[in-house]
Image 1 (cartoon, rainbow, N blue to C red):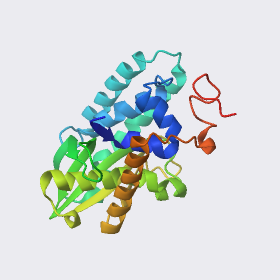
Image 2: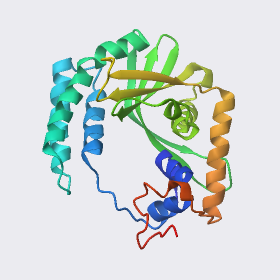
Image 3: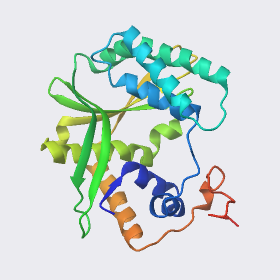
Length: 255
């Protein structure tokens, strides 16, 4: 193992045995669905928010969504896919305005910026690998932004979930390491893109507290992850069995 990613860490946090099946044994039963197709297509459009007009963003989304749905192997609901095209265009109709309102005058420094930085928490050569959706500069501050798609927005539990926040904390730490930027100059945000909204507000930005204490907390979690993986400790988290793709398969019987 030469590198690790946030998705791998998240899967370990969900269930260490699930992590083993996916990242060590190389198993996967999930082949994508309309929700993942929608997420990929709308992400591709969001990356171009600074250089395309609204009509172009919507067209790019629709083209990418068609391509993504054509790649799906399982039958899918065509009425739902048609509804998702409308929902995606609705999100993108207000993307430029909402981003401007939230960040003020800004400059896009990078999109899909690759991180591949050394991890020095334990012995051994290992790197953290990740891709930051968007890095923005506004005034003297740098903002790391990760887009997330959602049906109706995030619950209070989701907003406060530590494991979810660790993604941005890792990105901030290793972005600062890559560019030699002081941590206090960087802020972190999730941009939640809602397919449906009672308030007619389809984009919500959530700033994640990323002070020194929170960074240390996330790195301690990373260190715990590395220690357990290196020592082959893969305990099953039976609280995660209900929605697990391997539940009651030959790969993992919760009983």
